[in-house]
Length: 163
Image (cartoon, rainbow, N blue to C red; front, side, top):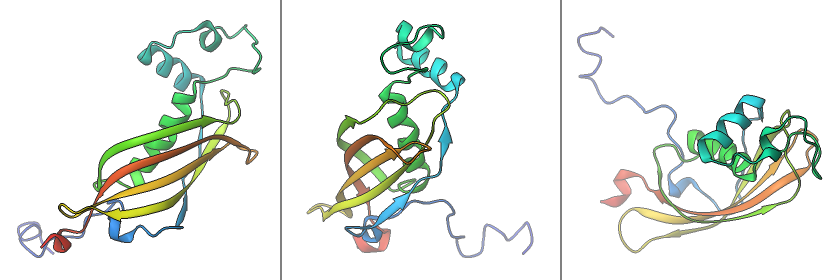
């Protein structure tokens, strides 16, 4: 392949695209990568969001959860980032609903991952898309569940299926 004709040949397959709804089967499970929550993550997140409570920012304060707790919203956001980057990149259309249940505290230094399971996949009557319900459970480095949430998303389908 030469430089002049590289873009003129048949289109190249897109790398990194998430799953189309036709690839999402009820009961399918996926494990995210892991990520250690750092002091920088905590300070940046609470400053950006305005969650500047001393329980998050005062390193000398030891509250009922012990250690340096991080907001549940940060825990959720880290895992949503993994999901967007991998499972639904380029195919996620909208987050339609979300419920969350905190199960245990997360602290600076904890390493998180999640298991995502598809609970329901319903094609819509309009267009090439579906409503996909998932349950996501986030675990720490000791495989203890720390947060459970559900999501309802609109996911795109393959272009040829719309015809």
